[in-house]
Amino acid sequence: MIAKLPYRLFMERAIGYTVFKLRLFGKINLCVAVFITAFYWLLTEVNNAAETQFSYIAEKHIKQLKELATQANTIVNSGDREKLQHWKDQLSQKENTLVAVIHVDIKDTVATQWDSTPYDGGYFGRPIQYPIHLYHSENPLMDIPLATKGYHLLIRLPQRMRPGAFWNELYFISRTFLPIIFAMLVSYVLYRYLLSPIQKLERATRRYAEGDFGTKIYPKVAHRQDEISDLANSFDDMGEKVSEAIAQQRQLIQDISHELRTPLARIQLSLDSHQRDEVITRVEAEVQVMKKLVEGALTLAWLENEKPTLNKDTVDLAPLIESIVEDARFEFPKHSIIYHLNTVDPLKNSSHLALSQSIENIIRNACKYTPSDKQIEVRLRQDNEQLVIEINDQGPGIPESQLDNIFKPFFRLEKSRDRSQGGFGLGLALCKRQIEACGGTLSAQNRMPNGLKMKISLPKCKKRKSLSQTN
Image 1 (tube, rainbow, N blue to C red):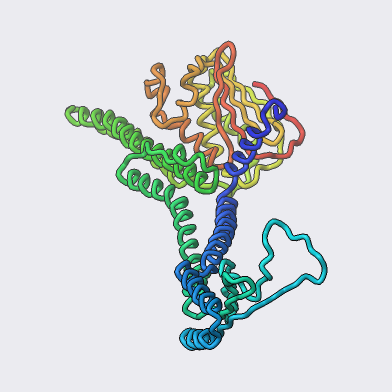
Image 2: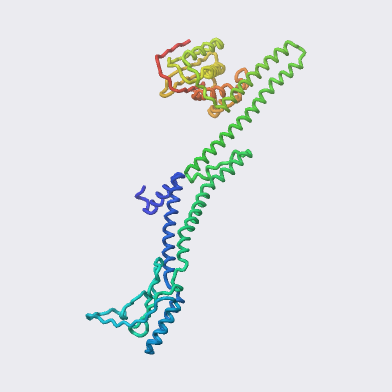
């Protein structure tokens, strides 16, 4: 794959992928390192450019120095030494600096072949075109050759002509205020980079508070691939769970209201009857129905909202299942119920009440929907890291599309709406949540050619000898 990609394209993808995958700490470090390096080079270049610009004598001062050299050359050509002395003394006093006019006659000791540039006898000071060192306190001696060969005007650069008048101030500013401004710029960039997703999160929070639970943040920041995108993903997950919880609570209230209307209506009809004994019997029956409904709904709401961990008991599953099966045989004498139980070590950190209620409810459901001439089978076995309880019936089964729905509160299939069979639709919902509170899972699967398998998976338990019994 690498060989097929052009080298440049491969490097761009590799570098882009590396930066894309950096976490927030790495991105901040990389950003700060790049900014500091860029600032260092920028400051160095700006400082060098400014220092070079400030080191040259201003054009007007160069013109003045050249005019002084012209004056000196005129006097030299006149041959009046007193006038030259007077001019030099006046200039020295006026500029408060050293001034000299010298004549130099340099002869080669040996013959020399000079290049194309005519040799003018050399310089005895700094030419006016050269830069002036800004960090030396003493002004340099400037050498301006006169038009008359061999004569030079030497003048220590007057203070008023010295370049870099504001260099010290500029140097202080460049070393103090520029870093501060640059640091503020970097802080602003990082602030915007970090604040933008936080602002999106804040706006989404307001929408959540207003009841809009469909707001998603993660798709807007997924490209970041850092802690902020992780936070957005967690926030979206939280929003989905909150939305589901609220929807479940609303549905629960609606279902409870619906289920209570029927017994209340029957009570009202019974009260309209003149047969007192029949009224009392009917009211007592309907009160028991409503009591079971309310108790089941409250238990379900507690399990849904509090999500407790039921881990205070030690449960011996084999005897427990055997006892439940015997009770079911007594209640459904026409059914054939068999069990195959592996005797296992007691299950620690669980709940005897929750497991017994769940297993009993599932076995009772299996008996309700299995014809009397068919068989119900209960198994207890060790499966790798889990202890598995299976309840297999030979009833009509469940449509595949409805297998997950049977664990929802108040869900009943069309064929089971009669309370004599299906109850209120709370049984399996309670079973699933009780088993999950014990650290296990509950699932349903259709059997071939017919029937339903309910599978309970619990934490690992050591296997002992096997016990098999058939009725």
